[in-house]
Image (tube, rainbow, N blue to C red; front, side):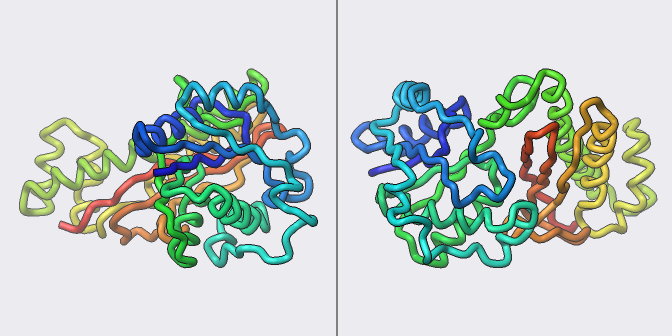
Length: 311
């Protein structure tokens, strides 16, 4: 079995986690290939193609220590002989939302190079980080829609001790900018906490039969906020995505007043199947996603959550 981990280089512990996971899945007799290629097709005008970090010697060391058998680091001419390809993969409607709306053409370029690298490396499975949730969803869709014979594996986001999602772009941040950037993960965790509180409230409310009795039972537990919400929750559709969004947005609004400020691109709670916003009647999986700019650096992050079924 051959497992491939695709990167744009500047490897860090998040990439190392992907490689170690690939090593485990491929097994001792399998092969792990890491690709290192800064793909010009997925950078728009004014983006950081020229300054994107290129650290191949360090990448080779990290990849080897994590368990890679080979690193495939082709030049642009090798991947695109004769210049940019005239035939490309198009991401479709899902590729025009969120990241696609902020970075037109980005996902077309990403899928085109992923398709080429899958053909060039011919893996049995390919691993991608869940931090790039929309990218992962589009790769899965391409593989399914175009009948690629490869298994796509998503690996959970790796975070630093302060909660910041690992990214090759983190090295651009000054110390003050990094403090502001922490608002991304804090906002997501605030939404996640609000979601967990709602799900706990809903589970406890289902344990008593009548709406008024539910409020009394929760009040007796000393949960003042839960008790205040209990009557509404007992009549509400399952899940309250708007409350999750609101909890996250409070943190982001505060960060917009910091020095330097956080400039929000989007905050969205979406269905991972198509990355459309979920309504308050949504049940099942969802992704709370955020993108923002701190100084000259644009960062993204997300957390998955699941809204429970109706009682």
